[in-house]
Length: 310
Image 1 (cartoon, rainbow, N blue to C red):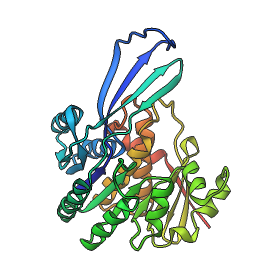
Image 2 (cartoon, helix red, strand yellow):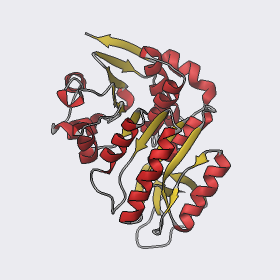
Image 3 (cartoon, one colour):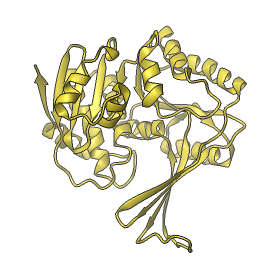
């Protein structure tokens, strides 16, 4: 079983308008509402492959009820813990080829809720084979909360795929227990290392930084340029097939889902790289976030070019 963590989920509301006008009424007929948050995107993709997946984190209020109903509809095992605060909305207005986002903060997690979740997480982790942790922390949690979760996962012997950025990622790499896999994009890698814009050769050098010692897989996604992947002492340059992207949002989450699913199916080496990164490409080809057309998996993995860099 794969356990996915989304500590700050949301109801994602997407409005599609022909144009967006300021300081007046905008009427919209194309409205889409989904159970959102990076880890829930991961869970949706994993479930499409008929892998057993459980989703957990914090949920509260009527929006939490909506997410609960969506998990039931999608046949994703629901391990979320109820909290006093209200789950947030995240609104995206797509207009004139642009996307304007309004993101709420979400609930403030109380100290007892935070402690209770860690106790629950320990029991959930014992039932898992792989764990994914995605996104940001809601307010109220200590900055070392992911470090505490990594330590618990290590104690019960379950590897963690971590997708976060900035200080949260830096702290997780400098703690006593490091993730099994991380997936920063090109800009997040530069921010992590305190560098400016990184070109492809810079990325090749950067993934070999001592900061990543002990991390089995370092996956750097670079959009249309493909990816650079470090696995132990090997570095790979990956070229993705050229596509017409319909909606790249959620592609990074889909990559995490791809690697988690591939690992659950005991893929390794270049086969795992192809499968994992193919999910990001396939997600970008669909309008729906956190969705892939599984009939195109074979095509995409075959088109993925993987070469080892010496």
